[in-house]
Amino acid sequence: MTDSTLIETAQSSKAWPFQEAQRLAKRLRNGKPDGAPVLFETGYGPSGLPHIGTFQEVLRTTLVRRAYEALTGQKTRLVAFSDDMDGLRKVPDNVPNKELLAANLGKPLSRIPSPFSNEHESFAAHNNAMLRAFLDRFGFDYEFVSSSEQYNSGAFDDALRGVLRNFDAIQDIMLPTLGEERRKTYSPVMPVSPTTGVVLQVPIEVVDAESGMIRFTDEDGNTVEQSALGGMSKCQWKVDWAMRWVALGVDYEMYGKDLTDSGVQSGKIARVLGGNKPEGLIYELFLDEKGEKISKSKGNGLTIEEWLEYGSEESLGYYIFANPRSAKQLHAGVIPKAIDDYWQFRKALADQPLDKQLGNPVWHLARANDHFDGPDAPGAGDQLSVPYSLLLNLVSVLGLEATPANLAEYVASYTGEPVNDPALVRLIECAVNYNRDFVAPTLSKRAPVGGEVDALKQLDAQLAATAADTSAEDLQTMVYEIGKREEYGFASLRDWFKALYETLLGSEQGPRMGSFIALYGVEPTRKLIAEALARA
Image 1 (tube, rainbow, N blue to C red):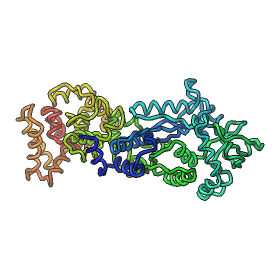
Image 2: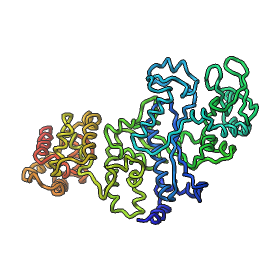
Image 3: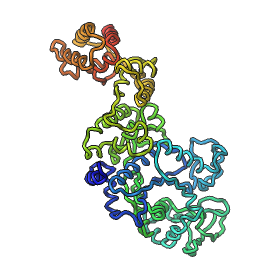
């Protein structure tokens, strides 16, 4: 495949990362001046620890970045921007030494001592280190940029002068969006008090935009004139966002639906400052199992650590890839399907024509970062020897005593070779964890009734005459033919398989029974049947 073939195919791809890349390429028809890299940005508030929302935003932005590179051949950068100049508004619940933070409320996050240890010079430095470790864990290619460093070093000074020059125009944009009380204290630029170090929410007067001189009333009631430059002020959120876009030259940034109005106002301010709002996607938010918005304070939904307890990083990437404009429920119940669906796409990749490959999530994930493009990156026709769903069915039968070791023994017996595939080893561990926490506590095997009893007896009789090494397909045919027999009274084969799942496995859904019997073993399956018949 040549670069020109890839570019030509990418130009008509309907995959959402390419759709985003196509819009950006249309805007930057000739790239950036002097061949400068196209800048993608993600932003974070480091008042708390990174979470699954952080992961999804960096991953999705990276998917668009890589699609843009494939589409255009142009250089790109990804900036992870930390808004650590923001004032601390409240003390988080999940930190030690709350009294230390309470004593520093209102100060920039980067000027508050760390409540965790002396390892980091500030609260923001600790959370920034956590953020970078988090992004490094998944192998993302990014440049970290700190808001406080940009303000303190003077890197934002020119852009701040632009805000002061256009102070009234920005007020005209923002004041109509605010309530009456908020209008009285609102200012696009928030000065840092020279006496307390607090980021002040007070009106200001621009004395001289070029020198950055402003006038305001300090907390002690005194009138103060000082420069807004060099870290002595911080822009309000929407103004700050717009200023950052213009100062850094951001070309693409996506954000959640909850920031839609903020994006509109910041886009207007960016134009006043002589720039433009970046291209970007407005994505839907995650929901919990009940369909409610996920809240860090409520603790509903699923964390990354919890997902990785029960599933792979690739499956998380796959789940996040699909339909970013549609809300997704994020709970443990979605993990098994995400894993098996990921591997189905991975298996299909090698045989697909290029246009189909560009719509395959695995093609995009394999290019997203060092993790997905590492030793376990997709190869020709990659597939698991045993689907995750089948592992779950097997481990549910083995019960809470199941271990990765004995589950691996069953798999080795089924495949005829030791379990050495790192991906399968990892998923075996995940299956044991998932069974322990979600499957075993809910299992309830019912007694067979009516024709189900005779059908199970017939299945047992046929298994008794079946060799231990009978193939999964032959076993499936055996089960299938029994279910078709009229004397057992099943309205459809679906009813027969549902009866098998409920009486033998204790669940309403299950695997291909032929594959399960081959994996679990003919004689152990007969034992399950005997136990079910004993309940009749």
